[in-house]
Length: 322
Image (tube, rainbow, N blue to C red; front, side):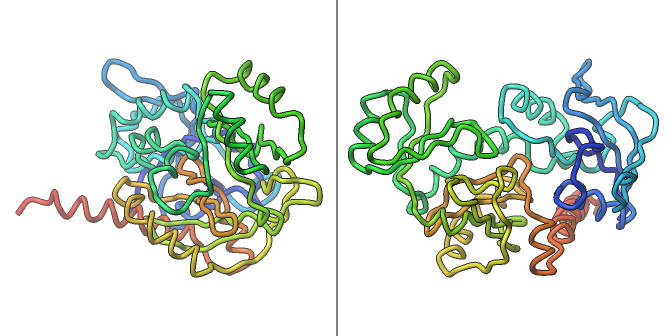
C-alpha cells in the first residue's frame, strides 16, 4: 500500500531527530514507500470549497545537520491525499481549533490523524474529566472563593492554566504558601478561561509516566523524573527519561479509556499518569516514541502506521463494488 501523506507540523528544520516523534513517523512512512509532503499550519487554507496547503515534498534521514530535504512549494489539494498527520505543537488555541474545522472538510475521505472533530472536542485537561475514578481530586473554576475552599480542603495543590502545555504556568502551592491570591489575580489577567486546580500528588517526585496508546491499546511507556526542586516532569524543563513498566493500575486506566479513544479516531494518544492518577490525555501532538524505543526496543511508529493502514484498508474493503 503506497500512500500520499501530508504532515502538518512545525518547521522540519527545527526538530530534534533524537527526540521528535513526528520525525520517526515520517521515517517509518518513507520506509514503507509512502510519499511525504510537509506544510506549516499557517499554510493551510480553505478556498471555494477546497482544503489546500502550500506544501513541499519531503524526504527525511537520520543524519544530524542533513535530516531533511524539501522540494519546491506547490499548492496541494489535501482531498487528494490519503493521510494528513496533524502534528503541530500546541498551544490548543483558536488557531489550532480553526485548523481542525478546516481539516474536518476532508476527513474521513482523507484520513486525518487524529480525527479533527474529536481533537477539537478533547482538550487535554478537559477530556480526562469524562472518565470516572481515574483523576485526582480536581476543580475547574474561575470563582476565587471556590478555589480557596478547595485549597482549604486539600492543603497541598497544583494550579495550572486549562489550555497550557509543556508544563508552562504550572504552580505547586504548598499549605504555607501565601501566593495563591496573587497567582489567581495574575491568571485572571492572562487567561479568560477557568483554571484547573488539583490535589498535589507527592508521587510526582518519583516521576510522571507518559504512556502511549495506539488505536486505544497501551503500547509502551517512559517515566519522566523531575529534577530536584522542580514539581514539573516535562522533559524540556529538565526531567530525566527513565525506563519503566506499566503497573496493574496503569493498565486498568488504559483499558478504561481505550475504547473511547478508538471510537473517536484517536490513533496516537499519550496519557500522563502520576501515582495512581490519570492527569492528562494528550491527543494533539503527543511525544515519547523515541524514548520508549530507546529503553524498550519497541518501535511504536510501526504500530501507528499499521493502525493507519489498517483503517484505510478496511475502508476500501467496505467501499469495494460487489
